[in-house]
View 1 (cartoon, one colour):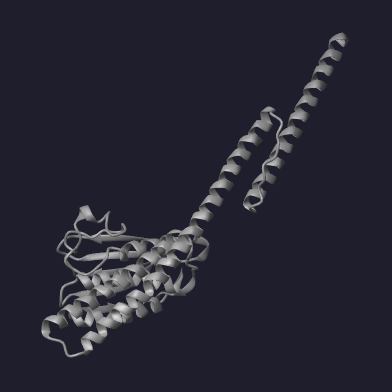
View 2 (cartoon, rainbow, N blue to C red):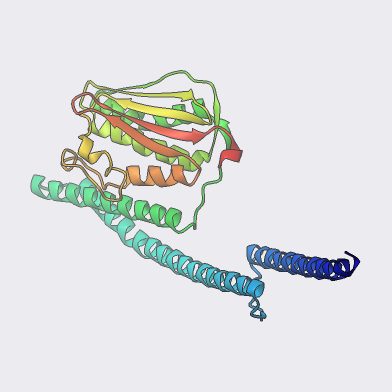
Length: 304
């Protein structure tokens, strides 16, 4: 027995030493991987040379992945800068010509024109206003898509949001003979007031636009688990089921809406704005029974 103990002890010692060496190697590799990830997160990752051992091969793969990620990030930043410059140029280069066009059309309408020429001046004014709105909407969409503009949510009163948007759309509703109602609600949610007001305003504007005279548009809200849901319900013609998955796409206009003024950007912008804040938008509609658009706003900042 004694003769067999020493070889077994020696073998056990070698095994323990080898296991300890492997443990140190894994710990060293994990530490280096952690350091690489920390540098990548901080934006300071740089390529290093690695020994091609089994564990170092893993380091090498991670390094190649991070190197590719860093390159992609730099490429994205370059593209965003290019888009930002392009958007700024378009906005700047078109602002003055469009303003001049609207000014000249306004001066013509103030002058003593024959009926036919007055109608032509009104058409020029309407097209100029439409072009101005289109440029502004495209600039907003581009800024949101590229991250040039990012909504900054904080806790705000939902009641104030509903009342402010209703006030903005009240005149358009009155001109069509539509009752625009806001149900009382006390509660707060996490959203950027400026951008969320634009998103909700786009939805309410659509509801007023497509609801016939004598109809109603109602704004209300309720608290759910994790979200505050804001509903915009109208008594309009409703939306066919086949189109409900398309209406949030850019420039999409359904068959029943093409005779009305619009560009097909309002709902697209609303979805973009809500998504960037950790929320989302849904529609429930039955042709002939109106539509309800539901905007979901996070109740707390830590959900974003």
